[in-house]
Image (cartoon, rainbow, N blue to C red; front, side):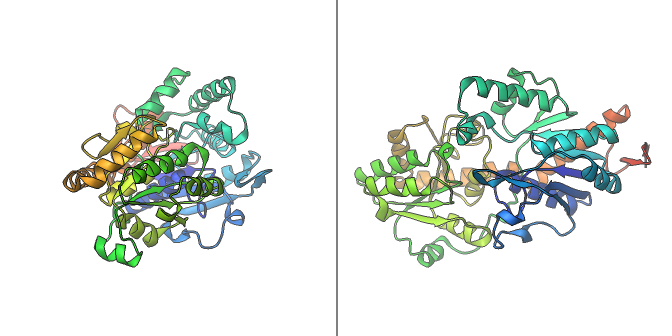
Length: 413
């Protein structure tokens, strides 16, 4: 098949959506499909040390001009202009368009799909209304309008994908009428493994005590302050442990000040952003993954840590309970409760056998999110929407025949 992916964020930026798109694109071309990514040119707002090499060279990338939003250096925008992406799409001849954004690039995907008569699949990645506080728009009426807009936007698609049932419910409750498919974000398990023994890694990084790790952007919604407060209670309770914070963001200065005020700064390590092998090795050297975020859908940071055998501590909110099983692959606690977080960390730190069993359970759970399995389901959905658009009596199967559009006409081969 020939698949066009539309996203408003892409390499060299690094976030959950980018990792999902890159992993999907890589797996698709590995399986023999042709893939083109249509996105904004974000290279000028990121450094040259970003992991461009993660993308398979067989994936085509078409970056279009964009501009930085005033006051938000890392957010790019562009005025929707259908002409340029449409011209590129006509030459690429996609069988299906798959959008990963609801903003201008998303509307370009909607318009191009309509003009080309091409099936359109939309992926919805998160509880966007919970991030309105970043723009000082955290009001109930605006949240309600945004959720209705989401349903309105995705009603333009042939099918909608979400990685968690909690997100599916939110869309349906606010007016979505299109078929919804709950499909995991893919993870490249080959990347999140290491043959280096934990003891060797711990010695390399100077880690001489059990360590909890938090991975992700340091923004308000991630509730890293709750993690710090919970860790402070753990330390005051007599558990000699350390906390590693991997990531960066605008909240870091405030969080570092909080750590000092809590008296735990000598036990908190701030690594900044890490990628590739340095990220994998730091995670593998730790013992427990911990997050207090209440806005997660199916964050790849959880899956990446679990793939390395770390039991995960998360909160009973969003999509986290759908993939962290309490007592099997990790622990679930009440949101915004530092005491409960401290208790969960204490149990995992002090009960070695229990921690090991949950770590093995975490590895087992993550197998179902492996990129090959997820992308195989995704290709099945692509074939289904293509066959529905053509009025076929049954879905096509790539091993025998698939749809190809040429000169505005569809034929089977």
